[in-house]
Every structure is written in C-alpha cells, then in structure tokens.
View 1 (cartoon, rainbow, N blue to C red):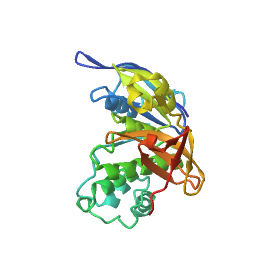
View 2: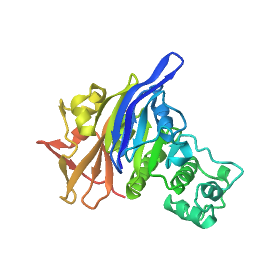
View 3: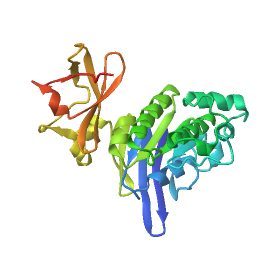
Length: 292
C-alpha cells in the first residue's frame, strides 16, 4: 500500500509552487516533507487529500490514480495547526461527526485512545490547546483513514506540550499502522517523528532519505552533523553509567541552540539529553538518568 506522487505540478498565477514533485511513501511509514514557508508543503497535502487539483501529475494509492476521485472517497484525512472544532458542539460530538455510526460509544472509544477518557461532554472552550488538538486527532482517526496527513499540527503549542504531542502522535500512528506524511519547516520535529525525510525546494523534492543519510549528503542538515569535528552515527551505543546497560542514540535533535540526543534505554523508555560532547570519553558516551 505505497503512496506515490508522480510529477505533480501546481501553479498559482505566475508562480510554480510545485514543479514536478516525485515522492514515494512506503506502507506504514511516517514520512516528513521539510521546506521553508511558501515552499508548497500545504499545497502538496491538499492535492493528496483531493481538496486541490494538480495542474499535471497524479497521486497513486494502492497503484490506483486518485486524480479523478473526490476528497470524501479517498480515505485520507488531514490534521492541521488549526483544530477546526465546532464550538457549539462538545468534544465528543465533534468526534462523533466522523464516526461511521456517529454515536456516542464510538466517539468515547476514540477519545479514550487519545487519552481524553470521560471528556465527551466537555465544551470546546473548556479544553486546553493540547486537548483540543487531541480531540481533532480523535476526529481524524474516527474516520478510519488509510493515510493521515499532518500539516504542521504543533505550530501553536508551547515547547513542552509540543514535544509530548509529537511523541504521542508518532507512537499512536505506528500502533495503528497508518501511512503518514508530516509537512513541517522544523527539521528537529521531522527528525523526531519520521522514518524518512524529504527536502522540498524550488517546487521539487531535492533529496529523500533517513536522517543518517541526509546527515551525510545534505548541507541543509550541516548544523546537526558535527560534534567535535565529526558526525555521530544515529545507532551509536552508549552506556548508562548508573546501571551499565546499553543505551541507543535514536535521533539527534537541535533545540534552543543546543544539540540534543533522543536515547532509548534498555527498558524501552526514552531520554532527551543535551550537549552530546559532554559525555564523550574515548569514543564512548556515558549518560546518567535524571532522578525522578
């Protein structure tokens, strides 16, 4: 169930926003498309979903062209930075709109999935920004999509909540085996969430690969590459100096002007630690878990 974009072109006025975009998103993959504001990222998602027609080219799902298929028949949903919840409906009623049977029981199950159990009757204005985004996610998932499109859904959230939702949505879409495209200008966000990344530049996909591959080949990722003059492979094994257990560096991130690492410990938990060079001793890294 591969999603393929073949030679997508879109012009607005005299501007070629998309100029021959080719992209392959593998089944159950989270694929990030990274580009600056105005690079055509949102237009790309609108074409995939059927909300905007391409001038040329097509979108293929299950090897079937979708160009002539209306949006409501594509089984593709979008989660955007605007929650677009109906303020006159409760949280649960918003979700129920997307449920096949449109009943309370279905909506409550999806609210529980996004950790909002017992919030069916909550008014939208009573919810925090993060809770509203979770309700929007529940509504998107209630439609039972095969493809989920994420259009910079974390933009308006504070950094702590943003990180929590990034991790939560990444884990949830993996659990549900959804094929997912995330568009973002935030390379850190892309590295945190995605299996593979593509760079959208001048209306085309200029490069595609894993984080490691882009580290090696893309000047756009240069600031994430070098620690003490050399690059760090993302699978470097380090040691927890408290327990002696191996810890694997899964992602490299750049937050608040510092290089960070996202590590997975032997028990499956994740840590975010700053300043990788602090832990370098003869090519080995040592970390100590922060006390709870």
